[in-house]
Image 1 (cartoon, one colour):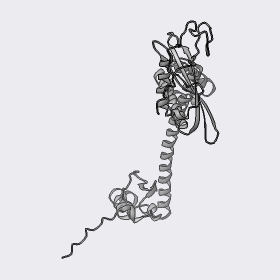
Image 2 (cartoon, rainbow, N blue to C red):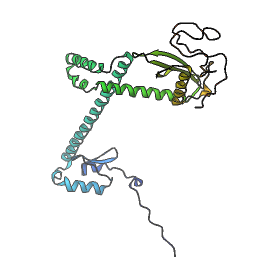
Image 3 (cartoon, helix red, strand yellow):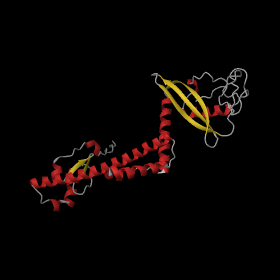
Image 4 (spheres, rainbow, N blue to C red):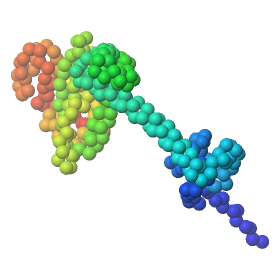
Length: 297
């Protein structure tokens, strides 16, 4: 006894149905983004079938539009089509204005960050723009008022821009053939040490990259071991493998038995690497000691 196979359901997408031009005049329908749309009530029909389109027209609009025939009907359909396109253009214009306002907010926030201004400066800038617009171009004052430049918005914009730049830098770091790092130290207004980590690399196409990778606060002591630990964590986060690092002073980087990163007089005044300067902020590496094993990234 043979068992018949279950019938395979036919999908509408496999039928490759096409919108017929005569439906535009007969049923007041047009095709918008592959979906049949009624010109009268702007409702959409899910399935592109003449039966569904005709049923919609007969049940909802036939009594009102059956009186239009010939050229009069074509003129009526053309008018409805123009109204529908005007509505769509209105929403497109609104979306463009909204996108332009968001883009302007990002541009002003970026300029604010580069100038080192407070987040609250955004509101002051917006008030200045509104005053200028009221004098120069009053018709565009409403468009400028849609730009959000509050302190919270500016802070959020700057954070997103910073994260995007860091992601781009990490993506470039995956393709570097060799790189080197440089460290610098500064303090903020609260006298907290800030470690700046710079990276310079080159890829297989010999394209150079030199960027500020990260600025991280150093709370408490700032010994060579603490600095190297921060450097290792930064390399892990950025995906930079140590085997591609070409710094000449990797040796004994975390061995701080002979010298520490200090803000007083340099404690290593003699021997290789000593400077004898007051308030030395340079990391001197010991000339002797075992080679520390670099962590794998």
